[in-house]
Image 1: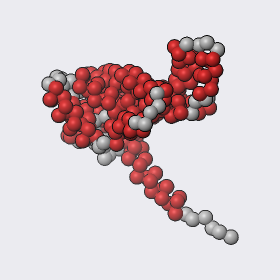
Image 2 (image 1 turned 90 degrees about the vertical axis):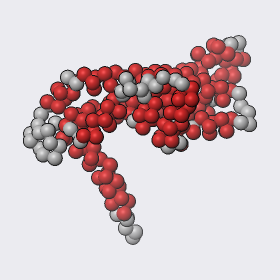
Image 3 (image 1 turned 180 degrees about the vertical axis):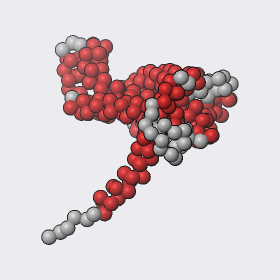
Image 4 (image 1 turned 60 degrees about the vertical axis):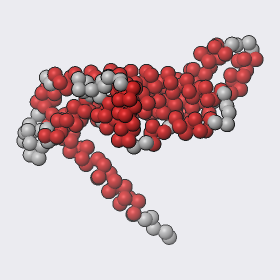
Length: 259
């Protein structure tokens, strides 16, 4: 009788410890009464109260929400349009175009940030919200493009053909059949791109201006002086928000598969 190996369980245990213990400690110490993150001095919510009174953090949060929202809006238009166009007008260069569309995800962020910095400097664009939106849109587009194209590839094209045979125009076919079918994939891509844009630090540092700070940049700047319980509290809130967004994206993805 064969005995099951314990190696996979040991490996999984090591990965879980390395990955989740720091996250758990961050959440726990965000409720610490003491200002020292290495000493537990009792349960308290005062660091969350301090965070709510922090004007600079509130402004950075607004900037991040505006940035993520605008980037998602631009990405959903470009990514969805590109995916639909490639699905309808097939040619030999489709695979090449698809590969190039995914390049922003494969290029290291620091290299991508340097490329944006050089390009925006050459174009003499003022660094700030405009350059941030352009840069974030660039790496958000692939998330929408991939999910929508995968959904289109799995669609039954005979439904659209039947609608055309019955006299429906291309406009009517798109809004009555294609769009409802791809909508869960669009939402999935939007939620993923929102999470990626909201959390980005590396690219944002290269393309932001002196008057515009995003929340991740603000956190990074403050952490140079050491991790404080206030930063732990903010990290906990961002963690919960990011998990919520990813769960919504997963829910949309599951709905897409069921449909």
